[in-house]
Length: 210
Image: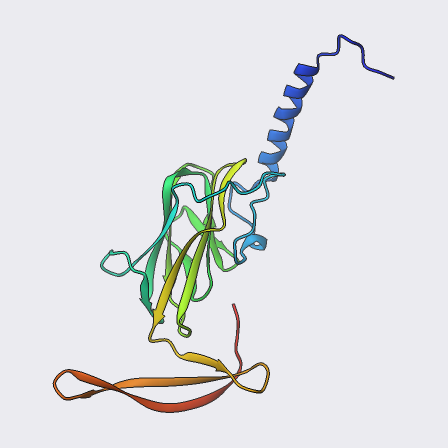
């Protein structure tokens, strides 16, 4: 049966828009992102059919040392502060390719190995601590930032790439799945000079991947 000519299509469309917005807000996660999106790059927020907004907005990831200064080079196994900041936002998710993240304050919590928000209250930064990985030569921190249910940035766009120093180098041997870790140390020679002395290699089992 066809609808009468007087059917209020404009009102119907507006009602559907409101209904879809309500559904999107219900299926969103105001108390934090689920662990299923704690991936590399971070997965898309489950806000209906909306997709990532292009670019990074004005959001950046800053890694700070113990003196509060920003760094791009970190020491293996050392503790750092990580901030995701920019314009006011409702939610965020922070992922690290290596090392260990932990939330700072009551506004954030762990979800899997990532840090996320605990409420959708407006905030201007996500703060976490990060212990740099003990091995490897680099690490990447990535974030998603949710401004609203229909506007969110990330998916690999917001990131900080760091150099890791002092970590044990890992190389793959001919035997698949087996790795060898070679450690080196510096020995003082002369007035303030240093020379590297190889200490040998130790075979280890299957290398664990986060």
